[in-house]
Every structure is written in C-alpha cells, then in structure tokens.
Length: 119
Image (cartoon, rainbow, N blue to C red; front, side, top):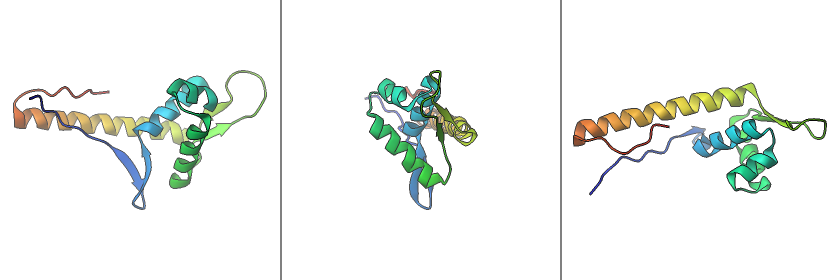
C-alpha cells in the first residue's frame, strides 16, 4: 500500500469560495494566450464556462481580474489586471509551501517520502 497526503487549497471570502487552483490555471492561460477564447480552447473548456468562472471570481473578490479589449489590432485582447497577476503568484506560492510542509510532515510521521508533486 502506497500512502500519500492529498491537499486542496482554496481562498474564501465571507465563508464562500473565491479562488483556487482552477482559477489560477484559467488566469495563467489568459495571460499566455492573450484571449479568453484561446485560453478556453487550450484548457478544453467552453468560452462560456471560462467567462462565467472569471465573473464569479471577480464578484467574490470585488476586484476585476481580466481586462478585455474588443476588436483592435494584434492578438492580445485580454490582459490580467495587476491584482490578478499578484493573486496568481501569491496563491501558487502559498499552495506550493503548504504542499511542501505536508510532504515533510508525512515523511516525518511515516518515514518515507510521498509522491506529492511540488508544482
């Protein structure tokens, strides 16, 4: 039997889900592709689903996460706000640290490394 700890980290506001790993992946895809539509395609999700997740997060956080520019030239039509960039960076940093501490505690108590990824 191979045991390993499992951890899911998310942020709440007023006791309600506000932000987690899935949203960080959505925001990273928007940043990488410069488009919500392209981000949705790269994640294998519909535009409507991604748009809805972004709007839910913005409502929960009370902050704009993505600025969109309809039309115009160039491929970059969607941009992360400074708030979104910081939120993704800080969330992923906290998540990675929590996973590392959990892995260390697991090794201390069970005497062997887990196969927990540290990404």
